[in-house]
Image 1 (tube, one colour):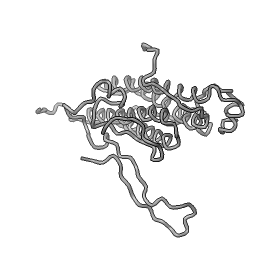
Image 2 (image 1 turned 180 degrees about the vertical axis):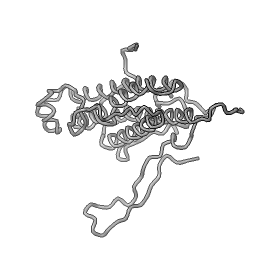
Image 3 (image 1 turned 60 degrees about the vertical axis):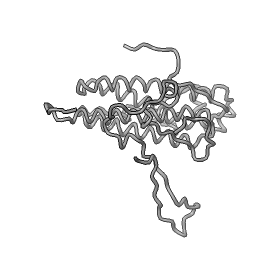
Image 4 (image 1 turned 90 degrees about the horizontal axis):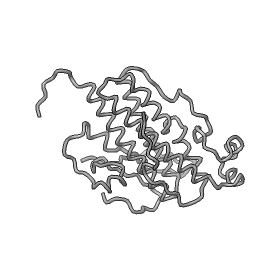
Length: 76
Length: 189
């Protein structure tokens, strides 16, 4: 199983003008890993799928503003 | 030919009057990686691509227009009652001086849309790789707009659109797999 996010730690200089962000995170969505879609993947119910934006659970990867309070959403 | 259904692909809700957000959102309306570019790119490339993937480009290109409509609705809702004073405060003074509160195809920095944002190389692999890149760039743009936005209702719609970019990228990747498949090879299932 793969993770939807990866991170790295850029160099921090004592002379950086802004407060350093020690860890930078980037998105690695499921389409990078699955290849040609295999048969019989688990599905959302039609109503859930309309809300999620995909019928297929393995392709669901919601993005939240790290500063935004989570509101509703589907269970992972 | 198209059949138009008079409703949005996903409901658009906006909870606060915030013209500044409209300024950021317009990147997905008339920007290089926006929905207009995507729709026109795919619906143009489909004429010179192998038969097996024409339908995919037609379907995705059509859906991009549905996304364009959602973005337009978001921008419209965020600005329709904004006074000139509010537009100016939101950094939309230069937009207002040309367009009033009308929408226009330009990016967040005010650069008008241009056809050079899209390509049609005629080479199926080159074109599909461009399409995959375009979907990933649009996905990233949605992430940055979600980061800039503090409107949970609006972010809900943006999350849906970002998820669609992921699925589109997946389908373009599958199209590449179809085209590179060794022809005449025996398949065993």
